[in-house]
Structures are given as structure tokens and as C-alpha cells.
Image 1 (cartoon, rainbow, N blue to C red):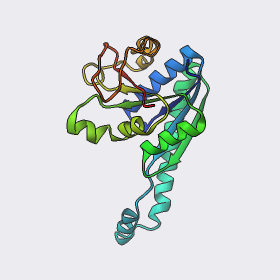
Image 2 (cartoon, rainbow, N blue to C red):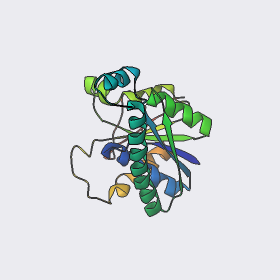
Image 3 (tube, one colour):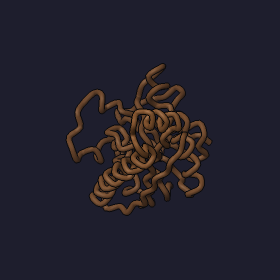
Image 4 (cartoon, one colour):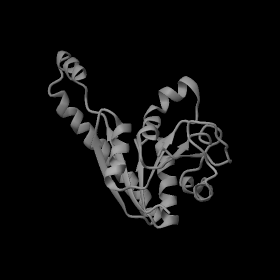
Length: 199
């Protein structure tokens, strides 16, 4: 079974759902956990526009904002991991393509499962809102467990209870192989999960 789980997060409510599933699964399996956030760099045209608008050192200010954001995000991750009783490694990378960075990091770190979230939507909405997840699934040599936002859009989840939502079904689906490719025909249980084996 999986020994090193890579959880990708951008700090959003949806990504936190994936975080909770990943931590619950790691606890059940006794797996090592790495949590990765990938930030996009400030683009040259944005830097130039900021300078033209009179903002001094836009790149430096952007870096300060990113650093403050990452401290807040990682404090939250460490708190959730502690509540699960799981030690985590926290990683932050800067890359123009978060999807490519996640797939590359998983391979180089020896992770044997990637856990991340995606909107459970179709068509144009999926293209716009799930493009990075789709890219990870397409590029990764590592299996990808995709947690959708289905139940976030159909019912409210009480604070602190996310780790209990679908955790057992997540384990069962992985063991039984009942889930199918994330972006092909799929069967759904009531748990909002899809297992995309990309290799």
C-alpha cells in the first residue's frame, strides 16, 4: 500500500478537503506525508505595469506577500496534521505551471500517491477550474487521488468534521479499485472521490 503521500494544496476550502482526506488516509495506512504548495511567479508584464503605476519594488512586495501567505497556510496545515497525529514535511515551490511542478515533485520525492482536489464539474467549467488537476493526471507517473467538491456544493460540512467525510470510502475505493479514471466514464459512490491512475 502507499508509503509516501504527497498532498497538493493552494489553501482554498476545496484544497483543504483534499488535505483532510490525505491526512486521514495517511493515518490509516501509516504513510509519510509531504504537503506541497506551488505558487506562480509574478509575471514580467505585471511587474512592469506595477512600476508604471508608481509601485516601488513590486517583485519584492510580491515575495513578502507570498511569504506571509505561506506562513499562514503552513501554520494551518501543521495544526491539522497535529490533530491527526501525523508528522508532515512542508514544501513550497515557485513555478509557472503548478500542475507540472506537482507531477515533477512527486516523481523526484519518491511519492507513491498524489492527493489533490478538483471541482466536480464538466465541460467549460471543468476546463477553467480543474486545469491544474487535469495536468497532474495527464503528466504524472504517480497515481493521483482526486477529491471533488461534490458534497461541498450539496451540503454544509461542520467545522472539524472534514476528516470523517469519506475517509473510510477513500480507503475502500483504493483497495478495491472501484474508482476509475478521473476524466473518463466513472461510477460514483456517495463519497466525493475519484482515483486516476495515470501510468
